[in-house]
Structures are given as C-alpha cells and as structure tokens.
Length: 133
Image 1 (cartoon, rainbow, N blue to C red):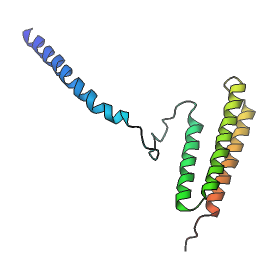
Image 2 (cartoon, rainbow, N blue to C red):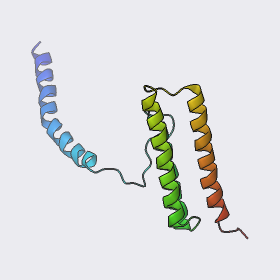
Image 3 (cartoon, one colour):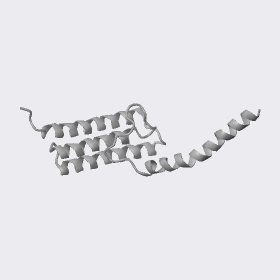
Image 4 (spheres, rainbow, N blue to C red):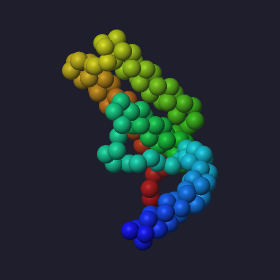
C-alpha cells in the first residue's frame, strides 16, 4: 500500500513540475498566427458554413499567385476578388432572408453563378498564360 501511495505522489509531483514547462513552450507557438500563405487542414476537415469561404480564399490565393507569375494583372485580380466577395455576400443575404436555409432553386442558382465566376477567372488566367515552346 505504501508503494502505491509513493508512486501516485511521484506521478502527481511530476505533473506539477512539467505542466508549467509544457504550458510555457506551447504558448509562443499558439500566439503566432499562421502565415497567409499557409494552407489549413486540407481534405475533409471542413467546418459547417465555412465551405464557400474557404473556396473563395483558395481562389483569391490562386489569383495572387497568378499575378506574381504574370498571368493576371493586379487590376484584374482586384476586380475578380470584388466580384467574388459580392457573390459571397449575395449568398449570405439570401440565406439570412430565407431563415438560414436556401431552397433547392436558390442553391442551383448560386451554384451556376459560382461555376460561371470560376470559369471566367480560369479563362482570364489561361488567356494571359505564357505559351510553352
């Protein structure tokens, strides 16, 4: 019985000693926000309601990369980003107006608008892409 008590007290003491050290080393990492270029958890780790926002953020990142590579001008990228924000706001307004859920017709309409927007951005990037020789 004395052995078990001694082992428990050693385990508790070691937790008290290591907890401040672990908390101290973990705090600086969590205090630094992730860089804008970093990607989050890809794959299927989506949060409800954030799906379209993340898609738009990735599209904006691709537009910034296209500007750096010379496939888009900064004015074109800014115009596309503003149009994307407008689509996002329109979707949000429709969702709020209908009580949080879009009807099937509204979903289809928004999907077609998003597809058209993505195609427009894609075609603009491909039109200005340097030709491979």
